[in-house]
Length: 343
Image (cartoon, rainbow, N blue to C red; front, side):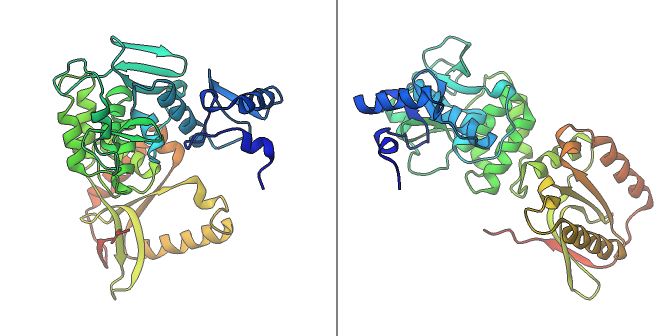
């Protein structure tokens, strides 16, 4: 049951606490709790409860604060991705990018970087209430803005394209593949968002994202693995593939597969052996049994860890592993088909 002081303070639906929303009694209680450590300040006039929270949630609150303190601006890029519940790579300094009709060029305001809002012709443009209403009922768009609880954001597709132009193709790829996997955008939405930004700096990175993003990466780690495979100069593999033995019995679902050569790459997230999904010893034994079954079919398996794909240190390993077995040619028994990922 909430305490009387808890109910005195009004909390915004995003989870932040705005000083401007409080009654006289609520303002007094907010200041008291801030002094005693029960609340902490995100920025002037915006607070959050003082407990520890995951980094992802911390950044989401910063993005919400950015959208609320700059009411005429549109949160975009990684900040919008956090508000849409998408995966993303944290930007330097945990900066939140917003598009604003009231700035010339780009400038920082605390943890917020304000950028000039431009239309499809590259011209400075005001954002109107009519603009923000488009697409507000559906978390899917082709470059339009969305509004929720008074926070204006670019659509998932537009957010990915903006992230690519601002932070580079890898950042945009993570957001776009997360949005595609979660059904929050389509590839044609990415193309439309790209076409709406013809004169922007960083457009080659956005073009790469629009062309390369797929809907079968189920995590940031898998997207970063696809990025490393591309950087290694290899042909595009199939993703999420069911492997069957010579009798038609299912053996395993693998992350990345080149069927002509029988080469498999698996991304091993840290959580797999962390104990979160059961006893780590049991998990390790099951992985060994699975790998044995696949190698007995004549397939070759490379396991990659988070540090290898995040830092790109695994790129030479990927290239040499593929090249070694490419020289030998294929030759495995069994069959395969793309896994059904309907959800």
